[in-house]
Length: 260
Image 1 (cartoon, helix red, strand yellow):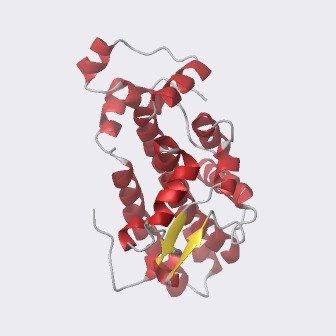
Image 2: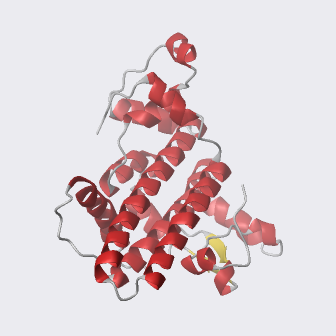
Image 3: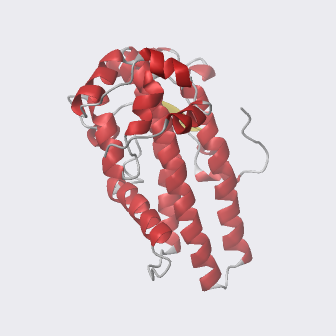
């Protein structure tokens, strides 16, 4: 869905964006706080179903809001890094770009402008935005078939590819998270209850999926999946050569903290 954001709004958002590292760290550092808070609610209100459901509703909306911001920041990064992707998005949505002089007048770039014109408030809208980047694959297929190597601190091991064994219905969960958030945000009378096991799974997906997609975007842009896999594998002897993905266990650990 296309919208017409105001230049003041675009400029305010532009100040919070950065390169791929900044996008990833900013997302993790903000998510860190809400995950800790939710688990504290579960601990302190263990016998109070009403209180826990209230906390879960707020947590779902927080997760969805953070996901939307993350994917918009990543989208903006990809637009600037990949000229063909930028052109595909402009053509696919028949966007009318302001003149460079007008953009300069308001202190925003064409990448900022395009990033704010697409709404990313659902799983389908996120997929639609990123599909052209992974053509001929779709966003969903690219996630499921990518072969990226990464380290997991809490497990003291390395893994390869998106963990489909842990998230066999990840797309349904991704879709449901946004749908629940929309319902809770716009219908105070909603009687929908979210089971603890469901929120645990949705929370884990909200932590892991963005980190994995962040690894996919520069790999796809810079040298393609095959070469990216070779470069990482070739550097196995160097710890810094292996990107890291944090799990919920890492977020709940008390002996370290995320710093920008």
